[in-house]
Length: 169
View 1 (cartoon, one colour):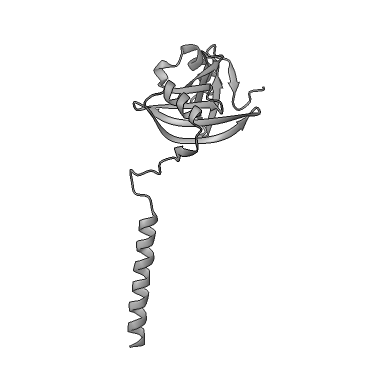
View 2 (cartoon, helix red, strand yellow):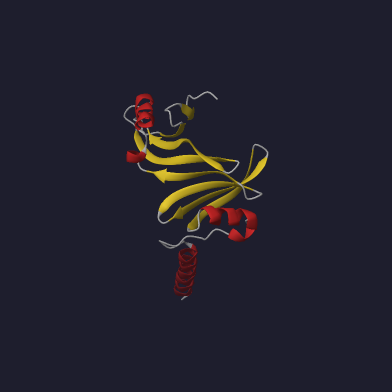
């Protein structure tokens, strides 16, 4: 009799624990929405003015070169973007995902020469914003090397490496 009650209790407890675990797990396709209430109005206004259809995936507040920067990762009409916006609402820079076919040949050849047999996983075209003027700064490229190591490099439009493994600043 005691064992039967114990089994019933153990089975019930197991069911409660499993139910709680399953309820706590995120379901496929659902993602926690970022809390946008903590973003200053001038920062959000600047983002929406430049990218009116931005669907924010992630954001963070960082300190960079003595400035407070809000770093956004978002999609606009299905395309991946990132933007860094200063605390006063000034856009510092922004990035747009591009395909390999849109990468300038000089940049592609520089990457192929330095990292032979690597595979390009992602390319973000970086646009610097200075005094409201936008200028292509370069390309942030994520590669999988021949040794299956993932690395990130930044290459200027002229093919010069700006950042990454082995690049001196």
